[in-house]
Image (cartoon, rainbow, N blue to C red):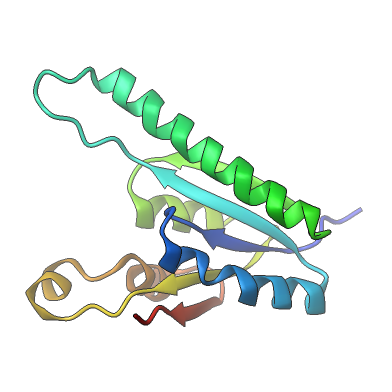
Length: 142
């Protein structure tokens, strides 16, 4: 039996990122697709900080966050799974999106401008440019 497609939803824990959830619920209801939540964790450490402890801490926090989000969606009747990946956001999102069962990437984007955006861009924009699957973006305002 072939596994049905899933909507990949990268979340970073922010209110902006979570604004995509209501749209994903609508899409999942209409298409009868499952939802795949993803949180990418990366510990930024400083001199004197135990790097392993920091990595474990950010992964644990990401797992707790996704567990809560997964529970809320399952309570509404959605087929949901959740994954934490460790590394750089864009690369980990793209690698996860390349999996066969992922049919769509849905994520929020912030409005960026100025020097910071020129040099760094934003995660959503980089994913959009390199994604192996269709991307659905919702812009955060306010």
